[in-house]
Image (cartoon, rainbow, N blue to C red):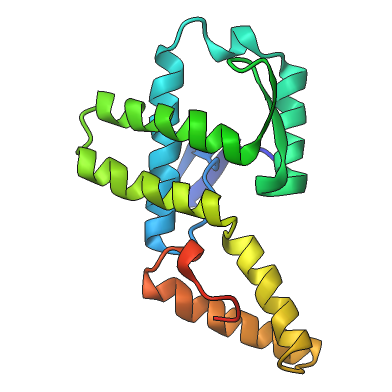
Length: 180
């Protein structure tokens, strides 16, 4: 998957070229999306100002391994993190290292401390609960099939209906009840 990709498009008869950056995951709610953005930009600011730079401490191979571990295992992944010099569970990396770094990065930019705490708390609570959009969908899917005795087509429709309803509610995904 290309995180940064050139896009050529003609809009109202005028051609243009832009670079799209797609590093942030989707919500599923607006507060979740803002929390993801806060974590990303806070870390971005914190990491670029650290010396030595992360890319001097971590091989491309380790970064690639971390990427695939995250894709395969989500919050159950273990990562190499050079400032710890050992494999670190994703939850520990987030709670002890990345969220505090993001907080520092956002505060360094002058973001209101109350806003920083509010949105990074969503990341923290999601990490502690282990519930994100994917885990909620899997657990709800299983419940629909096992406990509500729906066939796969009915379960898929009901899953999407509940997901949509909850996503418009504006409560972060870690607060959603399984089965919603």
